Length: 176
Image 1 (cartoon, rainbow, N blue to C red):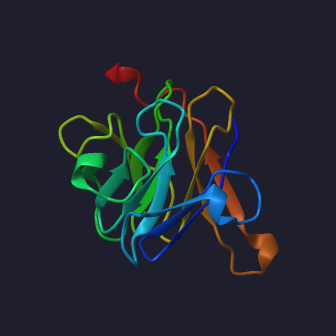
Image 2: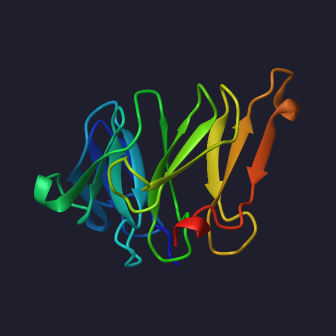
């Protein structure tokens, strides 16, 4: 899969359609979000196309078209709270990326099962980490499902930094 580059600056996205230097002819510029929003990206629709999004204070705005924001071309989801760190991954086997948040004050993770607003049984919650940890997501065991991890910065110089990875069989197997 060819991965291209994107940059988010104060509500404006610069989507580079190649893996090279900036050129206006190969860059889509779109307005989606505002200054202070946390940029996110993922394949929300499961069609192999990465799309942009933003996470301001517990609300997700996910583009379905990679064009300027309109309510008709985006998903708006309430999933998270002020201070949460947004994460995106394939929590379930399949083609679609799902949203989630890591709450650094408690080490709690909340992973969506269906990219809908928080509520009912549409999420998986678990504790993994401590106050101050930074979340990381990846397929650590090569099974096609993303796993969670945390990065913990040390205070004894760069060699004291630690990473902790968690491979989970399938956190949603009880929900399928």
